[in-house]
Image (cartoon, rainbow over all chains, first blue to last red; front, side):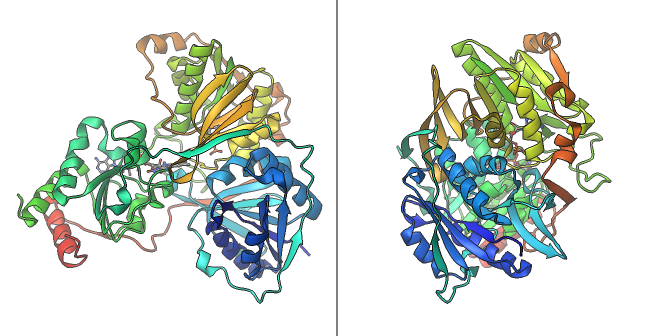
Length: 331
Length: 262
Ligand SMILES: Cc1cc2nc3c(=O)[nH]c(=O)nc-3n(C[C@H](O)[C@H](O)[C@H](O)COP(=O)(O)OP(=O)(O)OC[C@H]3O[C@@H](n4cnc5c(N)ncnc54)[C@H](O)[C@@H]3O)c2cc1C
Ligand SMILES: Nc1ncnc2c1ncn2[C@@H]1O[C@H](COP(=O)(O)O)[C@@H](O)[C@H]1O
């Protein structure tokens, strides 16, 4: 029988992150389709609470890799610990959430255990004896189907939100909790963790805004920002931006929406000249009504929008500003 | 400080992407290209470190002949010389195969620091840097937003999710993957562009770096792309048609009456 599928979970300060259950949901679907067993894996200095939460799900076992060297997180310790476990028990497929932490160490793990690694996967399907994983290369503009070239161990990481945590089915409580011993004494971490902090000084809190106008690289240069500022004013909105706009210092860093910026859910979100890369979408896709203005009809941003206008923002936005002013009787 | 910076040539952000007849890659004809965005920031960081610490920046690029355009641009920005892994055998690799080739080339260079981008804008694996570090046997840190050299060690600020950051210290030699926005990327000056023409670009084949052709590129990969395609639209926006004034009027009406958000 093929080796088990492992679903690697991730914990933060508040315990198990919900994305862990997205990985379980995907693992359950794969285990069923492939007739494999599924194990949830906890890596922590103390994994007991996480193990209990995972044991309530439909998994064959919860594997707990516990070691004082696993807190705080360092790539060396995590790589050494999981490499030992993989070498001892040869899982066929190891699933991860595609978090910033996973980006930091899972490629190293793949090199260490000589695994194939398909990262940032949004879906899978089992085609006969081939399991196909779908990715979104070219900044989400295209999809690709990807398969492993060898038997494994093989590694997959899952895009945040691609699978639903709520789909992780509950089990009958029979999942066995297995402690997996690892020996990390010889694998001292070379990374010295100094300080973890949030840059909060004077941060604009966009999460309270009812209306947000967000501007992307399509605006072209800083001198053109007033075009969206006016729209924002007409709408009584807060002005926000995609990452490149902040990187280029056209707007301050604290206006950034997305995985490394703020997460917002206004009633109305107007995305102007934003392509809709996943790292931006995670920060705004739960907004009430989303309007996208983009010259590219295939821009991924349209897939999460309620309304779209395809065209040149330099024509559309000033017109929209005028008509909003009229509609509001301020024109 | 001797620094290697890995740069990848990728389609320009606005380039029209035409799927090649092979069904798994982008057609080369008329494709506008640029240096991958985060690699531009990696190069800028390397140049700043070499300027403040003394030393040299060597650009390393795996790609076909056309990648020379990206390499020349990096040289024009200030890199000292370049290594171009250019051989048909290198093509078609996944991150594992590419990282193996880059590692073999960099191993011979005796550098203190390797910088890569955090992710390529085309393949988007977000793997090559850390795999390369593992292959070199060096520590690594990803998503770097600030670098403070300290002699034998280096202190770096990592970006975490949702506005969090973390300072960590690594012993050298080490590898860092650079996040976009770490600093302002310089433009190549006319003088730089002229000077770049005289700089060395060493073209290397697998044999030159001690690798067999089947260890790299398509033969050395561990994953295989079987199809590249335009995604089917499942859900999506109601696209409002018409000339600008009409479309905008329709939109405003829908925002008022349908969505009730105005
Ligand atoms: C780890 C990581 C974290 C990240 N975090 C974030 C984050 O928090 N937030 C974030 O936003 N990004 C983030 N990114 C970057 C993200 O991947 C994208 O690169 C970024 O969101 C793209 O920004 P954009 O849409 O403004 O630019 P582009 O992708 O360049 O898109 C510009 C758009 O403007 C359109 N356009 C151009 N001219 C016009 C015109 N005249 N009229 C109309 N439309 C026009 C184009 O068609 C295009 O769709 C992160 C990336 C990584 C790897
Ligand atoms: N062909 C290549 N040549 C040089 N560097 C590369 C190449 N492919 C990837 N890289 C480097 O690895 C980083 C991550 O790429 P990826 O793993 O494809 O997302 C890029 O930002 C580059 O710095």
